[in-house]
Image (tube, rainbow, N blue to C red; front, side, top):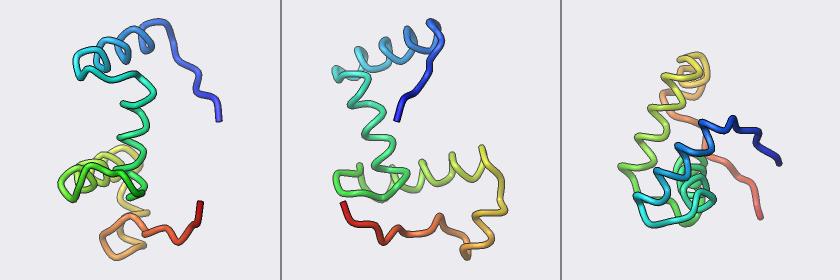
Length: 77
């Protein structure tokens, strides 16, 4: 998976990562773990915030379809 970033996006991501004393990759990985509820996520509050972001950004249709929650994933690996 490749992510294309503008120079401004890259600079801001690097700034946020530096502020948190982690790499940009670690910052993205931690958010992805919270959003997907994978091992290593930040906990229930972080998962809820990521879920709320997803619902606000992509609409309520997915949220309502799954009884008020992003679906849990039964994916190995």
